[in-house]
Length: 88
Image 1: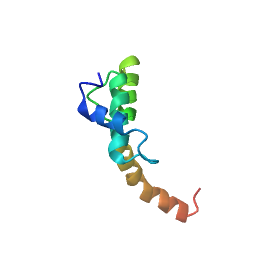
Image 2 (image 1 turned 30 degrees about the vertical axis):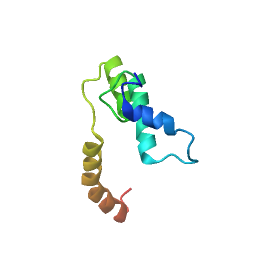
Image 3 (image 1 turned 90 degrees about the vertical axis):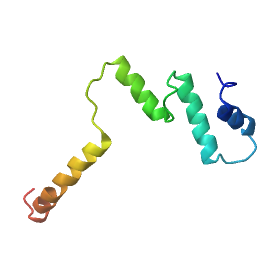
């Protein structure tokens, strides 16, 4: 699996060269873990894990974080009014 991906070969060959990992090394390692999870189309471990979870538990509807944040931003002004009015 790794030999076929030159980016992974490069990442593993550079492992231990420096004290800190750079962004390219981090993304390469994350891509490797996604491949181990059987999710080659993903480059984010969190997204790969979410995909596995959704598949295992047959999740049909997902709340997108941007949707949730938009909702929170929409209700925030009303909440601010209530707090300032000391109605709580």
